[in-house]
Every structure is written in structure tokens, then in C-alpha cells.
Amino acid sequence: MIAQVFILQPPTHPARRNCVEAIKAAPDGMIVRIEDPKRSNVLNAKMWAVLTQLEPIDWYGFKLNKEEWKDMITAVLKRQRTVPGLEGGFVVLGEHTRNMPAREIWDIIEYAYSLGASKCIQFVEPIEDIQPTGRPR
Image (cartoon, rainbow, N blue to C red; front, side, top):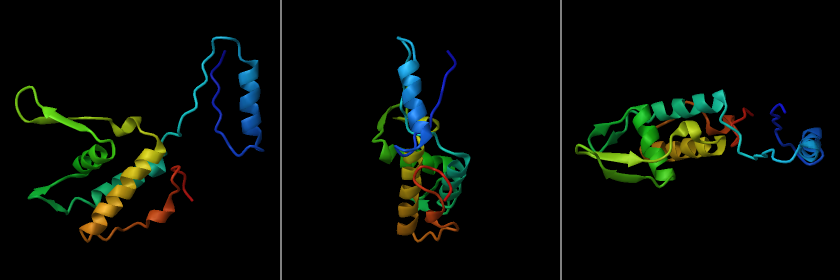
């Protein structure tokens, strides 16, 4: 059987009914997975644009690049652990953003806006231009 993907819509939308019918018609042993939507290219671009604007912040004498800010914010949101490295230093154990659904990327963006505001960063883009699902408004 060919894999089918349905984006769930309000209860009266045909996509939801089609999904139910596909489940009813599926043979035993098939797998049904309901998951959060993946992040869109627009949401991804938004995240990197916001993180880039954090780069001027002096963080305890360090200037962090956008990737490092992403790691810092992700560590807070995911309650990541830090362990001693194999040859000294420390390693943060956690989740990569490539595995995160859109709503979690939105959390990173919101946290970055909050952090930036506390450090007097004036962001170029308004926060309102993307919905929490990652779809442009």
C-alpha cells in the first residue's frame, strides 16, 4: 500500500473524513501516526533571522554566533544536560532542531525575542508575521 498523508483540518473538512475512511479501509498491521507539522521554510528563515540579530549581545564576555544562540536557547527549552567531555571540557546532550516540530521552533523564536528585548535588541521583523503553526499569515 502506498503511504498516505493527511493534514488534519476542522471536523467538517473533507481531509479529515478522507483520513478516517483511509484508516477504516487499511489492512491489519498498518501503522497510523499523528504528529505535529514539520517546520516550513518560512519559519526556518524566521528562526535564523531572529537568532542572527542576537549576535551583538555580549554574553559574559563572549560573542555568540547564530548557531551558538540556537544551542543556548534549545538547551533552556529542552532542559538539556551538560556532561564532562571525553578529553576535557563539557558537552551538551540534547535534541537537534532538525527533529523539532514547528511549534517548538516557534518556542525558540519567542525565547529569542524575549532575550533580545531584555538586552535592548531592536528586531527588524515583527513577531506577528508567522502563526505558531509555522504558516505565514
